[in-house]
Image (cartoon, rainbow, N blue to C red; front, side):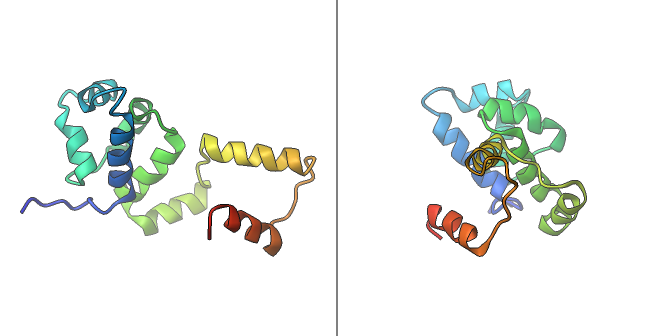
Length: 133
């Protein structure tokens, strides 16, 4: 059996999903080339969890996968150093905010007339309801 030490990481699962979503528009080989990988098998190894995605390759990989680089960086950091160390880095430097999350923040600011609303249990419940939780 082939060893896949990173197959259960969120990054491996996300890369696999994005490749499937992009399949009608580009091949896995095209994604690999756009990410700067000479060997297209590197993408296969990342999505199968056989290897980690190198942190310095994340910006190019995000462009190739047509995804938010901040989100992909969060997943790659978690994969590279483990969830506990990634949480420590995030605690020190803050959580990278994706473009989608920035959209939510802008919507909250517009809806609240830039009043800097506190997150109450009622507003948390409303957010949870939006996501079915």
